[in-house]
Amino acid sequence: MNKQSSATSAEHVTQKKRQSWHFTPDLPLRQAPYFESPLSIRDSLLYLLNVWRPFNLRFLLLTLAVVSWVWFTPSLERAQEFRLDWILEIGLRNLIIVLVVAGGLHLLLYTFKRQGDDEHYDSRPLVKNSSRFHFGDQVWDNMFWTLISAVPIGTLWESLMLWSYANGYVTMITFADSPVWFVGLLLIIPIWSGFHFYWYHRLGHVEPLYTWFHSWHHKNVNTGPWSGHAMHPVEHVFLYSDLIVYLVVASHPIHVIFNSMLHTVGGPTSHCGYHNVRLTKFFSIEIGDFMHQLHHRFCDCNYGSYETPWDKVFNSFHDGTEAGNEHIKARRKQLVANRSR
Ligand SMILES: [Zn+2]
Ligand SMILES: [Zn+2]
Image 1 (cartoon, helix red, strand yellow):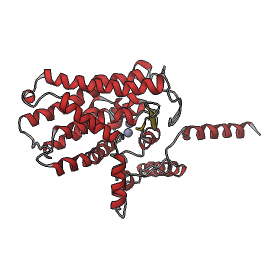
Image 2 (image 1 turned 180 degrees about the vertical axis):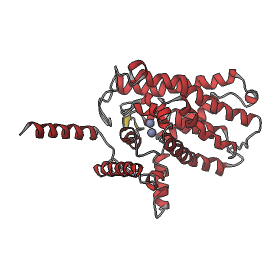
Image 3 (image 1 turned 135 degrees about the vertical axis):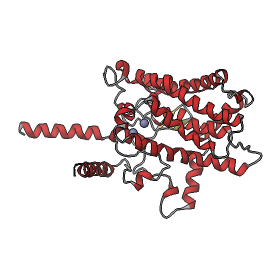
Image 4 (image 1 turned 45 degrees about the vertical axis):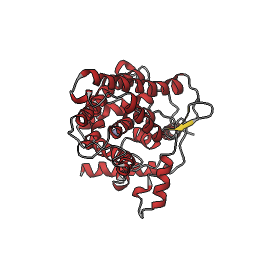
């Protein structure tokens, strides 16, 4: 074998290695059946029953929202005046949740490596000693932006909504008054949040917004639990801005807190890098998000969530397979060619 062909073959192996995953869920990835054509009511109901099943992540987030509202949210009487004391109480609650979820997952999966690389999408270590990250370290950088920016900004959005309920600026319902709408809205919230996420995120990939803001999040090619909120502060403002819908949609503070938890907890869980996480000997939970992991590696695909139709509509859906790689590469070439015309 001559020198050149051996170099080409080494390059090929490296390329293959870069493209391959240590673990993937069942492929091809499929999005929620709500937006499949023709619509199957049966499949959609089965999907909903599955994602809401007891002790699944979504069920636990709702439980956390109810517990937060009942025991760890200031009363509406106190929230009538926009004051720092009760806002800080919400901030402290959110800070503790983030420390437990992101910090706990990081210790479990990356410090103590309790499940080794079992169900680890990309087994390369998180980055150290790199000028790409603030403080030269991916984890320190990620923690800094989570604690210094994501928690306060998420808290401010939630406080703004609570203050609006307290002063009657928005229509507040209760489960006793409107049980059907109360439950129906809970089912809609993840879809709404995914819809909002797709559009603000897609906008973040347009220049110069990408360079100014969203590129901060994409320093994380491989992700860990703290990467979920490793963003420019301006992006945190937009991330939580889906809460604004409750200014016009009749709701209860539990809806706002649940919606907010989709970000506060969903950020660390969806970026944790592992598919199923074994929390105890007898209990593991599916919290990873391979669709978004693909977005971090390839950057120009999978802008939305499993519950948004837009990646399919705009041809940017990567289903995780080799054919998906080829599809995204071909699409990228086409976009570059269109731009240079
Ligand atoms: Zn991300
Ligand atoms: Zn992105």
